[in-house]
Length: 194
Image (cartoon, rainbow, N blue to C red):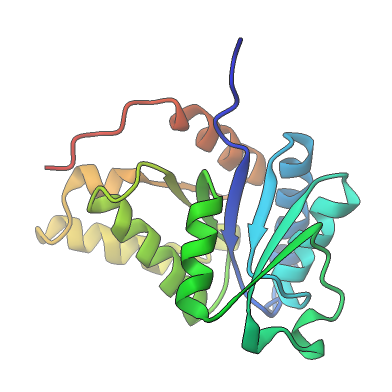
């Protein structure tokens, strides 16, 4: 019997929606696709921005949402309209990332700000160092991550990032294709990073 590898995906994204309606549409599509695949969303526990949008989409499409929130952020301004089926309160931001990491089978970064970049960078670094073998991906809506991808390509060209490490990052602009690749590649033997 086939055992599904991806039961929970942590999604890092903005606490605002950004200026391009495509970001919200993409968050809604990713949430719907996750619910249809019976993949639980693990997210930062907020009700605003893309975080709130994807959580709402997962819930409205019959899926489950695990919110992980630092105690200091458990306030009405952050929690308003939050949609999780389960909420875990942790002591701080480091504990939040650790709890999200522990709960997830893979990771996706949607458009977001400095916090989103920091979260996905740390998870990608942990993958590079061999601390985990979970897939790391970018949902590149409207080319949002193109500048980061150019940076990674330059780092690879200049010898700071090995090609196998660069190849670890899964990038798609379609939520459905991104999830399909995460599911396909979760069964693959990870490349040697040496």
